[in-house]
Image (cartoon, rainbow, N blue to C red; front, top):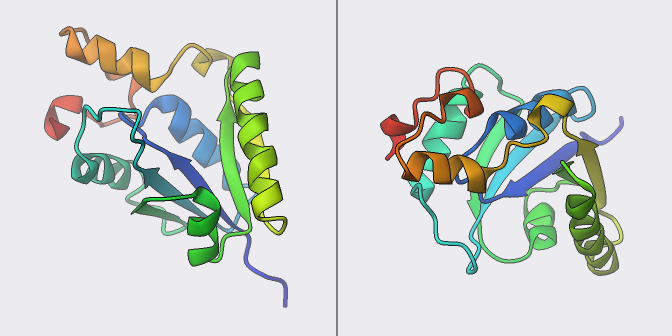
Length: 158
């Protein structure tokens, strides 16, 4: 019997956007299970609490048992080993994203040769959407609803 294909989709997801959702839903055609892993990043101050980010993402995927949501600290490859995931899933919006992710993926490969990084390009309409911009829209009182998954109202999670 073949091994279950489990991918970890790591990020801070502050907030989880339509771009993130699209990557996960498209990756379900490749993987049996996807663990959305909310990592702590010492270089980023979170706008949404960890608890609320977990609630937000859980709401988005409430009807799909193939999606799990977890938080973690430390190296992503160590978390992958902990949850028996053979893949790291990443979304790529721009050439700059690719260069950044390529470096991380190559270091991960050196540390964990048995774990593969898989990068999916965002769909064209999601290319400009990123958490930093969405967070700034929210922070300044703008309507970020069109950049969040359907049914997610950011005020419910603040």
